[in-house]
Image (cartoon, rainbow, N blue to C red; front, side):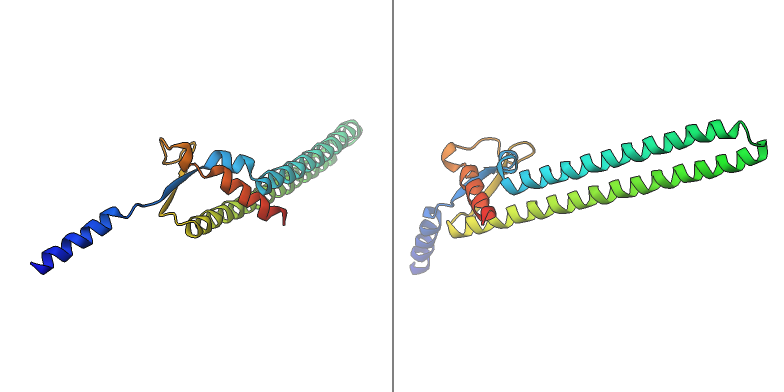
Length: 168
């Protein structure tokens, strides 16, 4: 009989314990997180610089190709073919170099964004632990929250926390 009373008391205690659940709109969080905004702006600057470099190199190569065409008319066919082969090889090398730089830039951008996402997840976890949350769910596009009351929306608090830490 005592065991049944204890079991009922334990069940009553466990069932009274409320789990604290909140959610974060992932899309809005990332749109408003200043570090992510700064990384994107820096990345855009680098992409624009690479595009200018590509345009400049392309323009220079086209001028060389035009000069070669004029010069080739005065050469023997064999000599013209040799130099044409060299021009093609130079064009391929330039293309490969620019493609490699583009790939490196993309990889760097992905690494930086992965770092931001990791930092955000750590901060959300730390916030949840510090404020007694059992769960903090992700909402927004592709999130797992289909509905949540505004009282459970932690997005503004998390954005403020992240931006304040980033300013330091």
